[in-house]
Length: 352
Image 1 (tube, rainbow, N blue to C red):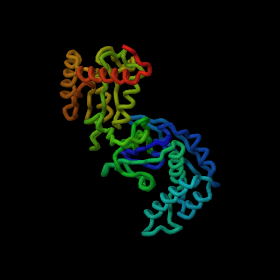
Image 2 (image 1 turned 135 degrees about the vertical axis):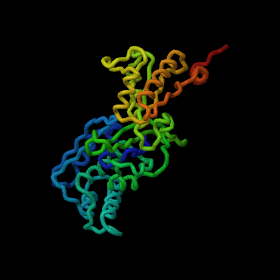
Image 3 (image 1 turned 120 degrees about the horizontal axis):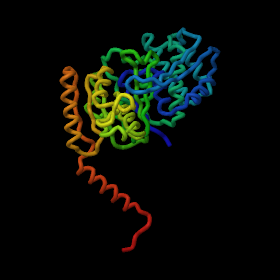
């Protein structure tokens, strides 16, 4: 089944980071490596991938070669056209390296204009191969944020996105989210990070960032999500998964914590400790989101007290309390709706 892919370079993008994001979605590195091994290369090269965490966890790709000098447009074109790669990969790759050569020269690119180093070429080809392996047929993108220091869009990534993607909101039924980190140290103050969404094409436009607003305001202000359970013993695998998805959708670190039973030793933080962790992670805007389905007066009073304490201690930070996920009326309505759907879909009729 063909897939739709959406790039969100909210913190910059490089060709290697784009490949890392595809690997984070589930693309197998061994499959990419096997295709790259078919290229007519005499130079030695290696490609590795590792998990790293910069608020969210993603995949960082490192490509090393024994050739550091740039390849010319003629050399890079020959590498593609003399390879067993598909016609689509060859065509896209040729256009990308042509744009790279044009950016390095003046006007129409010439055969001897530089078109990127070998590690950059391998990253570009790896991304194009990844699209085919994931059966991606439609690619869109969010425009990269402008004037954010340390979050660059490399020339190779710019040429890649211009060639393969259309700038528009995501229009897909989300299945998976992946993060790719830049080839430089991801623990630096401004790590490059690109988010990708994979799913089935959908007619309606879905702006995923609005699901967790205002934490996802795209104004370059560092933020965090504090997801609050009533009791620490509720924090099973499903809630851990929920925290990971919230972090992926929002592009922010998400801290799972509990009002009762949380401590620094059992892996589930107290709410106050989670806020402190977010502050220590340089968050300027923090959203505290109760995970209960309905309003609870005791929980609300406790969180309101914590909110007053946090605002008093960190007056320069924006710390806000979100509404519960559902009101009692909304929950009852949805339960009734699901019951009606199940009844209508029943395969065995009942005779009155």
